[in-house]
Structure formats: C-alpha cells, structure tokens
Amino acid sequence: MKKISFLFVVIFLLTNTFIRCFAQKQIYDDKSIYCKYDEKNGRLNGNFEAYFYYFQKYVVKGKFENNNKVGNWTILDSTGNIILGRNYINNFEYKQYIPKEFNFSSTMEKRDSNGIINYFFLTEKMVRAYFKLCEEVDIDKNNLKPLQNVLISNILNGKIKVYKEDGLSKEMSIEEIKEKFNTENQKFNILRIYEVWYTDSVKKTAEMRILGICPTFSNDKECKELGWIYYPDIRKLSAYLPVENKNKNITNIEDRLHFRDFSSNIYKIDDALKEGSKKNTYNKEIREYMQGDDILKEAKRVKFSLLLKDIESWLFETYYKDKVFY
Image (cartoon, rainbow, N blue to C red; front, side, top):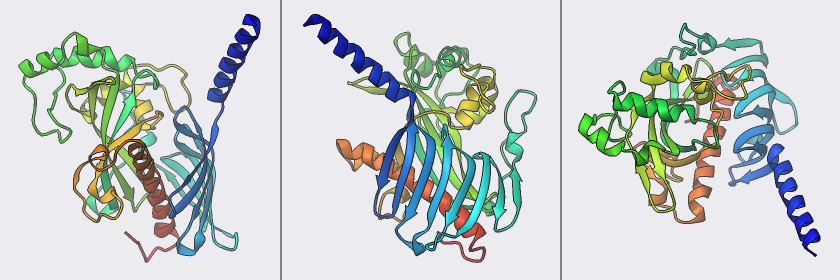
C-alpha cells in the first residue's frame, strides 16, 4: 500500500513538472474581445488568436515568445482575407508586408557603451493614447535576485535617490531610508513597477516604459513599500547585472525588464482603464473597487484591454490612416 501511495506521489510531481515545462492553452473572453493564447511561467508564450466582437469582426493571429511578438502576425477581415501583415523580431522591430512594405528597426535595438538599449525618440505629438499603471513582480519567480543586494547597498550608500510614492516627487531623507531599509527588509521579495503604456503613431504600435521601481516586502499579513526609485537613473546599474538563461535579447537584468520577460500582476491603474470610465487620473488600486477573486479578474481584463488597444493602434494607424478612434 505504501509503495502504491509513493508511486502516486511521484506521478503527481512528474505531471506538475511536465505541465510547467510546456505552454498551457488559455481562453479570455470579456464580450469585446475573445482570445485563445498559450501561457508559460506567467508569460505569453506560443500561439495567439483574438476575435473582435465589434468593428466588422476582425481576427488577429500571431505568436508570442516570453511576452514578445515574434514571427508572422496578421489581421484578417470578416471574409478571411489578410488586410495587415507583419513579421516581428520582437516588440520593437518588425517588417510590414501588407498592405505595403514598411520596415521598423527602432533605435531602441542599438546598445550604448554601457549595454543599455536606447529608447526610441518620442514627442508628445507622436503619442495617440497613454495610460499609467503599476504591477507587482515576484523576485524569485522572475530571476531578479541580482537586483536585491545591489539596490539595497547603493541606496544605503546614498548613490540612489529614493522617493516616498510612485509619483516620484517627494524624496526620502537618509534617516527615513535607513529606518525603512533595515536588516529585515533587505530581503525584499517583490518589485513594484510604475510604468506608462502608450501608442506611437510613427511606429504604429504600443509600448510600455518603466518609470519607477519599488523594492517591496510582502507576505500574507502585510505589504510594505520600502521606497520608489526613478528607473531610468539606474538602467546602467541594471545592465551590469547578469542573468541566467541568456538569449538573443536578454543578456542582463535591464534587458529582462526592457523586453518584459517576466510575469506580473497589475494592482493599480489609471481611472480611464476602469470599465465605463472616461477620466485619465492615476489613482485607483484595483482592491479599492474589487474584492476577492474579482481583483485578479480585473487585472487580467486590464492586461487584455491594453493588448487590444495595441492591435487597434496597428489597425487604425495603418488600415484606416485618416481615422483614429480613441
């Protein structure tokens, strides 16, 4: 009997390991968009297909690799004809082949002497729409441990400015920093990220840029923010930190954050992202208006809402050049 029980335990563990190693097929449906997608380790990985319930029922097909669009992406009309087509290298580089050739190899892909990928030049006129939001990233699950000790040591040495809130306006004094960054909290397990999502009329796509990060200590009883850091100031520092499992895009911690090769949970959003709202104020934590399982459901809705807006940006800026619907 003990041998049989042991065998069942082994089979159970092997099955779970097998499932984690391969992408799991998922479905998302909020009555505005229906998505079939593959997910692995909390990242979009594998085939993706989205169906629009409105606007002539367009269908989008493509593939993700660690949250990045790769390979052939198409938008089909209601008759099954391909009206738009792109070949992606990653979220920042693509070649459009339908309706006409349009290459976009952004300057972001050019590394400077510090190994940092330069941001693409952006002006206010190029931005069609934007939203601000915050996400939580698990340090252990996303292999960001090299960031722990380096951040703390540089903060305590006064080399990194720390702010009280994600607005990054009120700087903390050295006394406040030392009080918060005590021995217990030096092993922070969550990285909170403050970022802006926007659509670019030149690139004809959407992008997320990280503005701030916050080392956070979290458990079942409490969630304690240790202080916010303006992320562009420490990109150079992040670029010196190596990562495991390097690939053509990811060679350091900065790359991992830049290419969004991590799993996360959205916890704070622009009021405009709240369903039915037309305001654009950044003041809503999801737990303020949702409870229980609805918190995760709302975070997922926001995630796919932004993905939908990214596809809309491509469709409207390319196929409907003279009409932009926002």
